[in-house]
Length: 348
Image 1 (cartoon, helix red, strand yellow):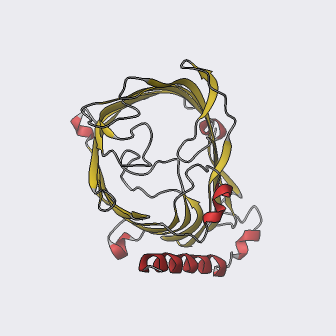
Image 2 (cartoon, helix red, strand yellow):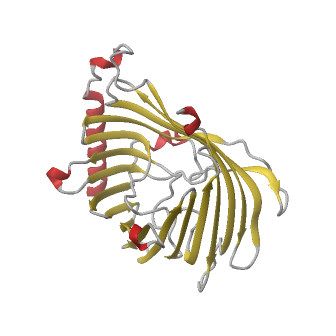
Image 3 (cartoon, one colour):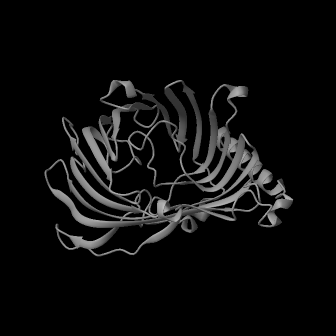
């Protein structure tokens, strides 16, 4: 057994022991008047539809269709203070990293509609201290200031445990996290199809993050199987620049398994209900599991969103890859989406 595998197993066993040993406080049976947190907290409820056009580097249109998305997320607070909670996220989508279903309406050949839906994210979290928490289950990737351009997709999860420390007065960093577990089963969206991954270990990540005035910085080292990745990213608030509100810079280096690197630079601007982003990315051809909108290669990209109401918004995205000496699946892509967010309506 390798040292890294022994370390992962020891940490997972420690996490399991802590989860089992920490006694749920008496407030779990608190009366409604005694509770500081609701029994159930709805955090997300939205539906959306989009038109997607994708052309590869051979100038062949591979997708020209309409899709739909549903997302429901919430937290069950097991005690009155919210120190013990179970979080879940239910979405459409059939595989890892994709939460959109095909409607069956296609302009590029016939395509069957899909009714796939799965609970992707399911975890039990113990807040040991206000600044220290431990989670176990199907968990999101910690990315810090990195985005889905140079890091793992927002719509994928790993099975395992995560310890998060937020004590800048003690360790200077605003956040430190350690994640261990298993990342695999990329054809399985549902957490219940990935339960057999419990006890297996091929994924370790250590992340640090710090805010310094108008600058937020993060860095992490991630080991997935035999691949070791380093990520660094920063966000700078530049509101006085007028043209942009924020500038993001992010990069990664793959140290093993065909060493290479990539990076992205992009900016954001909000004008009332209108939000705009534009940027440039250069991602090496062997990079995997980032968001499919960006994929691999050298490209420019941009997006706009407009809030028609608090609940209803329209979003558009375009990207164009260029000067790549390898094939690119999304050499050109255009998305136009309409999203309805029920949360403002629920909170009225």
